[in-house]
Length: 228
Ligand SMILES: Cc1cc2nc3c(=O)[nH]c(=O)nc-3n(C[C@H](O)[C@H](O)[C@H](O)COP(=O)(O)O)c2cc1C
Image (cartoon, rainbow, N blue to C red; front, top):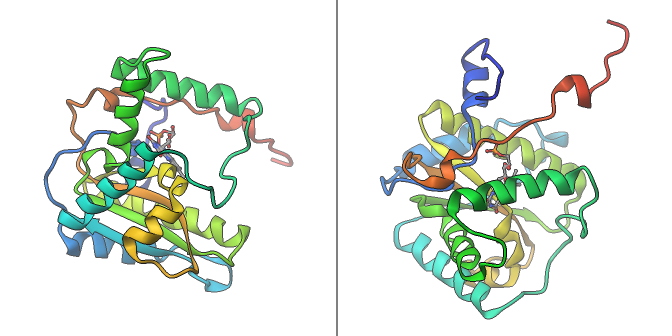
């Protein structure tokens, strides 16, 4: 699939990870989620600051949260807490983003201009694509770039440990667009900033979106090797 052969179990878990956008309703026990978070928290962080704060949602709490954020989305734009990505995206990032956007829409049968279908997909995203567990990932608003770097390692650890446990994930920047709503719904302290969400569950292999396979630029192109 990736064109890469795993050389060991760790690589197999990394290479088998994909963003999953359709989950089975099968519950994931709290103990499993807590263990994944404990394992993921072994990620390195600058001066061991461990900037991650997580609200793990399941059951009725998850449902209430998803409905609340969806209502905010349908009501219109919310003031943004931070610039997540530059607008417009420069190349080559714009082309890469478009490739996955249209690839996904193609699988979902959403044609250019079909706003109702695009909105329904967004609502599905805001319901963690049906995953039984949704993480809301938070960071102290006073922390800066270095801690966001740490956070990425933590999130990747969750995704890889989940794969090794037979589970699937999807990171979700979409939740960062609703900071005020999320603060109100989860009764968060003022100090918490929303990094992203993450769905955890088991892949629904019949979900059309899960046929998506994404490409990567090879190291031979993005890296330069000197002195070998
Ligand atoms: C921080 C972050 C936020 C993301 N947010 C979303 C999202 O809101 N919705 C979505 O469908 N995918 C989201 N993704 C998934 C990316 O689209 C995906 O990682 C990328 O296209 C590569 O595909 P792969 O994860 O299947 O390898 C996000 C990924 C990351 C790392």
